[in-house]
Image (cartoon, rainbow, N blue to C red; front, side):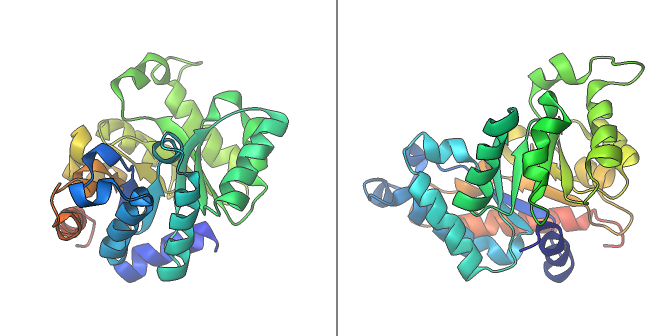
Length: 273
């Protein structure tokens, strides 16, 4: 699967900019599910199957699996998505960033072991640390730019030669690092003015936007700041608000209901909608 082609097709054919984040927390699972040995896989699979027609991509967070020694369940989940919901891209949210042979191993982990279609990466170590990921030409490489957490401002707003650090990242990625057209950027919904600035700097480059739902980002401001003129260009992520819409046996129906409302709310503000 080519990540960018699959993402573009999902935007067009499913009419959705919603990304569902898969951040499993077994303490929040419905009681009948908690004691099952494959509970994480079963919970996430149910959410995936209930929402696949509403999303442009899924984004499993690797730490939520690794902390529970459930990497095998993550592998099974991604395989399930590819088999049951083909052409639905999977972003491995790992925020990797290291040099040389270590970066090569992280790329192998993401793209060969887990078979992810894209990965989130930290750009702080520079272009050479990103090269091992870029060498997989059909995969997406999504670089942190303006993150949704308050502490991101400690570094991302620093002046670096007349521009802010997040602006430098956006400009470098869009003009120098994206030679094969496989890059995207992470920009938090909690900072709509910065979303608009990144869009201005990067043209139609895809943006992964966390921060709506539990983190309080505003859907209308996010869409108006970040959509391309064609009403595309965004992967607007919601995780906890969808996953834990109910802690009862109706959790699957509740997750679908919240996902559908979120998708519809996003579409309400898209250009031309």
